[in-house]
Each structure stands twice: as C-alpha cells, then as structure tokens.
Length: 66
Image 1 (spheres, rainbow, N blue to C red):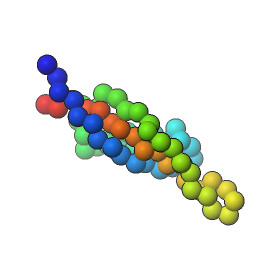
Image 2: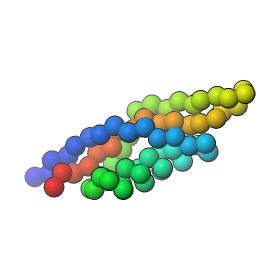
Image 3: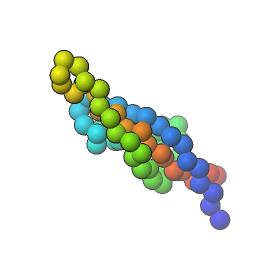
Image 4: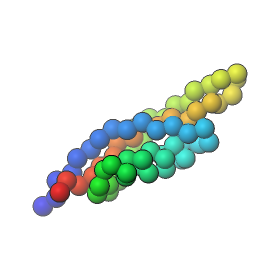
C-alpha cells in the first residue's frame, strides 16, 4: 500500500503559465522524491507599466512517501 502526501508550492515565470508550472515542478523535484502528479490551483499575473510582468501559479504537488 502506498501513502501519498500533498504539498503546496508557488512558482513564477516571466514567460508563461506553462513555464511557471515547469519551473515549479523542476524545483520541487530537487528536494522531493517520488512526485507523481500536480494540479494548478490558481493562476495570476503581476502587471508593470500596463504589461504582464510575471505569470504565477499555485500548485499542489503529490508525492509518494517511502
């Protein structure tokens, strides 16, 4: 039987929401082993001088405990 845990992370990118998700998962994988999935809970942008400055995502990452 496997036991999973969920942790919440926030990631950002100056490029796109997709890039923010990829960066967030890559960073989480540096310290969390056994990641099996993630879902984006929310998305938002920051604006500077009338243009999108940062794309931000809040994600929940699932991983299996050893």
